[in-house]
Length: 467
Image (cartoon, rainbow, N blue to C red):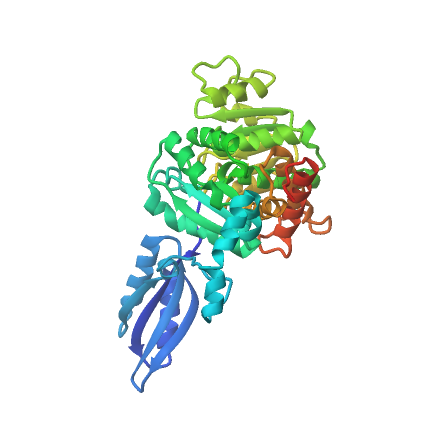
């Protein structure tokens, strides 16, 4: 599928050129000729004969950005002085920082914030450890923990390379829920070491957000930490994705007039995200689901199933279908993909039931070209930002953690996740709902607070809250 120019590949090119009237027009023509998009044009200095201009352009990728620079440099009379990648500039020095919440202007304030006054506060917490939530940053802090083994679409790139992503996650926590999140990249991919490390740092945090840890290790890490800790442990790649998918699917089913418990769902992908989506859909009422991986449908009679696939085989595919994905999709009402690009085509979607729903979430290249899917399906969602109905975890994880922290919850469970999905779905009103709007924008006013309140209420109702 064709990729459009994106601000994530945005460059600013500093040029010097002749000051005559047609010079600027030649820049625009050159960029447009190679498929770029000029988003800003600023004159930084001017003289009688020459002017200096900063041209900001959106490109498709790094090779396309280079082609844009070459096209500008090929214009007669133009000199390229400097090229800046705006995404790299944003990351210089990191994207987050620590700031003091209290003034330290004189000796009195210093003696209360630190020694000797701080000793009284520490003594109070030693006498009653629960006071740590009231008197320290624990109450509003989340650890974003990764081993760098499954970062975005980059794979196993290690702890250092994962840090820009973890910083970005922390920035999103702060922007959308005013939560102080701390990136923690571990230089180990051993399950025992990860579990033990998180266990010993947990006293400083009110919640743990596991991030970009590869399957199947992520399942064991999360399960063991939930047993060990008295604070919520949430693997966003699993549960954040699952919550947004459930919310979007509830609204897509509203669009086509179907019920979750009555539709047939074909899924592609049985990894961390796929398994979490499956379990949450079933907890919410889905009954007829077939899950496929690279070897075809998961069913009870299949050989060499690991523990995760054994659970899927035992709880899905009631008819025992043993064929491939294309056969599973035939006659289905819903397709959900969290797997690989270009594994379905328009003919496959045409063989689904009327008013089919397609969630092709492989990113950046979906399981089917969305433009082709829209020719046959009633509702199409992707993980991409350049199509309607983007399934994006940032819609939900800030609000989920805000609710958990506000309740001082000991855990996070499926009931809380379904409540979060219901709250997210309800943000889209009946007047707004349609095939191209089943999920709200992340910038929708009050979104995180709405999700947070739904999660908080469940935590209190189920006795998990400590407030």
